Length: 143
Image 1 (tube, rainbow, N blue to C red):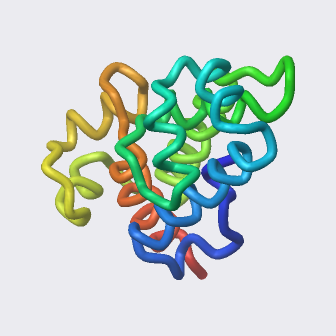
Image 2: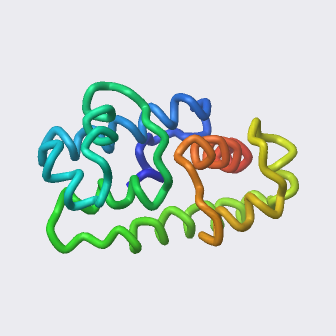
Image 3: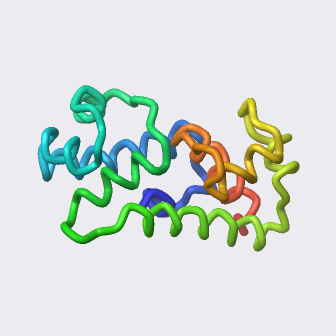
């Protein structure tokens, strides 16, 4: 899953987390093939090929979950998305964080309200945005 792509997210920058997400997605593409993953995930072949080629294409959490779901037949992309959202929300609770605090401490052009909407799935959440939020939340929960 994306939220556990590394064992120590609190020590990673948003870019390092994004790289780890890409590695996890790339492993699925390497195992299943570009065409198979593109078809299963409902993504353009060019996007999946770019990922396989070492690029970092813009992907949403939902698109990344669709790639991860392509790894195993019967795996549910919506369940993957929900697990990531739950992880972030639990981290916010543990760290006593609100969305305005996150918005003022990450390098994103999102308001607290937009961060809340993205985490809740009411607006799209890109992997770059997820990495920034994930890094900050994990850092606030570090011992």
